[in-house]
Image (tube, rainbow over all chains, first blue to last red; front, side, top):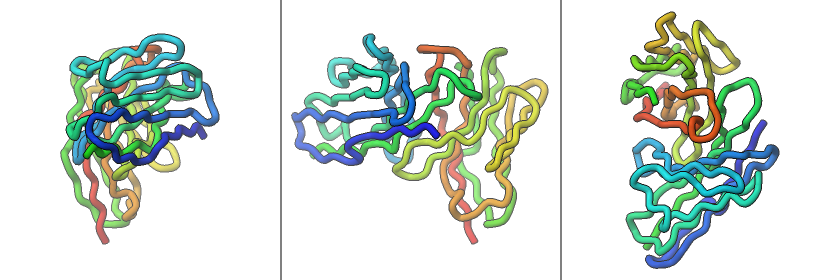
Length: 118
Length: 113
């Protein structure tokens, strides 16, 4: 089946530093990837839609200069949290969409990255 | 995007059948219904998808009435490992920005012995 990986699985950083999270589709090409954020006991919140070779589309209220998204290839998207602060501590999850297959708009999710900002 | 409403939580004993109902009164003609399962500190996992009537796979069944304003995920004979949050999503089957998913609150299922 389609597998999506994320790296790192967890990261702890100091306030003010930048952190990069990678999302890879391992056995398929994904023209569209999505980034979500999830706080404890809460639902997933879509942050942005990432299309290969073009600028990401950010959801309302998400600062594009703080959460930099790059989708340079059909198998890799990166999310960089710039100048991280404790309130950015969260569980970040990516997903990749397969454009073909039996299910419409089926998205495969990565295992998530736990970010803790001290 | 159609708004979904589902119970916040449900409890069940191991071996029982669990039915989780989701309301989506303003579902559009080209919308599909998809259910995801999420364990703590993991990404969601696709369970099942349907458009109308009944869909069954190796892990669940999805019942959709003719008006499509609701849907019911049926998990047969649950086990402790089915304890998770279940999300009902309604979304178009299109491309690009139309393919984004909106997660609701989900239903937290707790299975006990």
